[in-house]
Amino acid sequence: MIPARYAATRFPGKLMQDLAGKPVIVRTNEAALKTKLFDEVYVVTDSPIIYDAIVKVGGNAIMSKEEHECGSDRIAEAVSDMEVDIIVNIQGDEPFTDKESLVSMLKVFEKDLNEEIDLASLMTKITDSEEINNPNIVKVIVDNRNFALYFSRSTIPYLRSTDMEIDYFKHKGVYAFRKRALMDFRSLPMLTLESAEKIEAIRYLEYGKKIKMVETEANGIEIDTPEDLEKAKEVWN
Image (cartoon, rainbow, N blue to C red; front, top):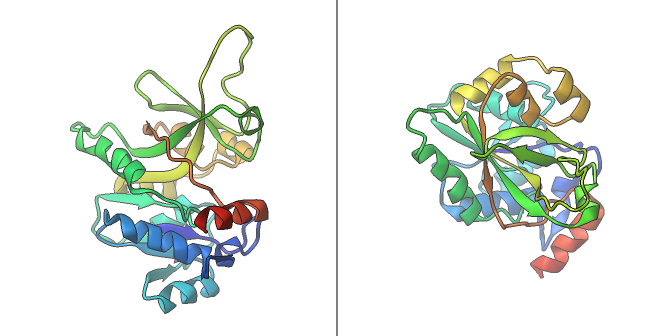
């Protein structure tokens, strides 16, 4: 499932911007299909423009019937009547989605015989101080089993001792859900921490869900700003 909202806050209409001759959302849909990991790939959107762009190239698209605060809500509506076990959420602004990272994320469910994991997601190590301190980049901290403890736009963990080395991780907005976790999410109201940070993954933690984080070295360009789009064009060419 690829949630695709037209009115992005920082870069409205970004998913319909041209990337090497095709809209960004079409490129992301192609990247998901190219992995050949999924029984079906759908773009789920509130925009007739995006819907038409996907259908025009022979892709699967679903129009949201309701207003949604986040991608999880949008996907939950779309899959509510589908017979599925695991749903993968790939953000619409991720045309550089790679197969290796998705395989690593999906493998955690094969080993999860007691179904302890409600959902899995990706993180990548960051060392650049500008990224570490950038509130537009969501950071994640994990326990000794790589279950998420918290997500924040702030710099976490805070390094009190300057003579200590610590790893910082950026949360990549790619998820794999058990269907029941996604349905629970849809029925649960937003609480204080999610509202404060504007990070949907926090809702799962606030209600006691277990998020398994998988480290990846893949660090493709997420198109959040016009500058990101220009970088993507350079890499694509």
